[in-house]
Image (cartoon, rainbow, N blue to C red; front, side, top):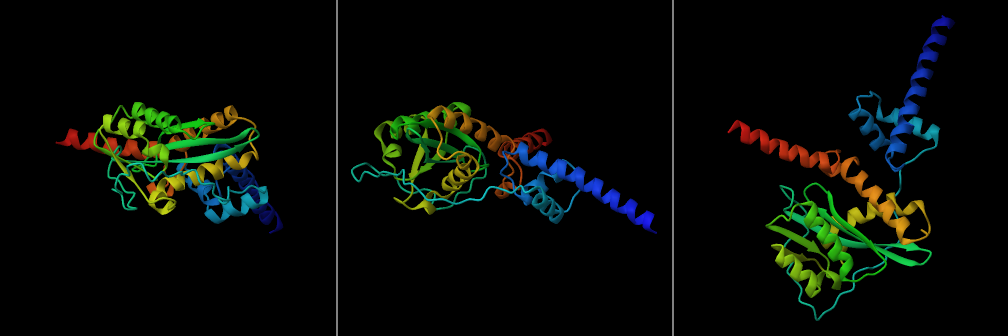
Length: 268
């Protein structure tokens, strides 16, 4: 009887050790930001059967945990009442039925030893894919223009989409407005200082600050921030599991969309 219990205990111990190794691997491969739920979902994607409660228990034993959101907000929105302000075409409905239907844009900041560094993102609302980004020491129009140019290039200059931002003077500048018009993109803005009117972009900014910026306090210089952002954007677009799109990465979500269109065209 004792021999059977010993064998059973040994098998359970060996499985726990195997699972611990896999859990730690997944946690490390995903920038050490996943909590138990995300680690469990990734293990399921890799066809490694395990209960969520087991993952949580073993992560506690390993003393590894997910990143926790929090922190104060630094306002990067500087409004100018004299600038022409486009209407709000989104009305807090950040929903798109296809890629390149709605882009949202916003700016966040990073504290470094030499002062603040600013990061601009352009995000496709359909999949949460980050289509453009830029890091700069300056909070001027060039920052958001460069992010927009990258988005236009990466998406092959799509037509007929809406670009939504806050009332920041960078987004309302003549140069930025003219570039949107030239690209055939309709501008939309939310309310000054109201994060709910640009909630999707604020959510991505929050993830960025939690999953990247928490690692250094403060960062040393702009190049360090830029490289870390490059790594994070690549991971976010291609590997990070996002709950709003079915716990798959943005790139995979878009691929499923285009695969479905191709299958429908072949069947027609």
